[in-house]
Amino acid sequence: VQLVQSGSELKKPGASVKVSCKASGYTFSAYGLSWVRQAPGQGLEWMGWINTNTGSPTYARGFTGRFVFSLDHSVNTAYVQINSLRADDTAVYYCARQWLGQTYDYWGQGTLVTVS
Amino acid sequence: QSALTQPASVPGSPGQSITIACTGTSSDVGGYDYVSWYQQHPGKAPKLIIYGVVNRPSGVSNRFSGSKSGNTASLTISGLQAEDEADYYCSIYTSSNTFHVFGTGTKVTVL
Image (cartoon, one colour):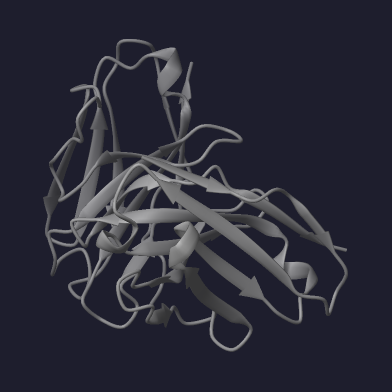
């Protein structure tokens, strides 16, 4: 099982960014995928998850409006797009596979998004 | 929903046992047996070490153990080793719209 994320991004305030998470080694639609944010020197923050079977996203409080989760089943890839970027969006973004509906057993390597 | 509360740091000496507490409420930790613990080394992705309060994934050392009492979950690391120096996060899954909440994180320092 592997989750491989796209590379670091440097964006200006107000721009958009799309981070990808390519899954391999398992049946993509059998496990949900969550997104987790970690600001510099800070803790983990759950952003929400996407049902990889139905494509239905669920956003945590604080991650509604500017954040969009999506899928491309043809390449077993999940995406998070962040619009109207702000300086406080600077963080490492992780995707993580949901296991047993309650925990995360595999994580991507993380994608650093810098807004400056 | 607020983050679960963990001590900022816990020091320990090699070979010692340490325990990290994760405090929530009756609506999260106290109400569900879906507590997980993650280990994160600097610059690395988190790694699952405990799920379902007490279960270890395959390949995780049995020096790591989990428990829960009331609104507080705990992670115990026995026989502390230098490689255990890392940040540790608890998390809880609930059936509310928030679904998952992480703890504030604890830095374990091996003296």
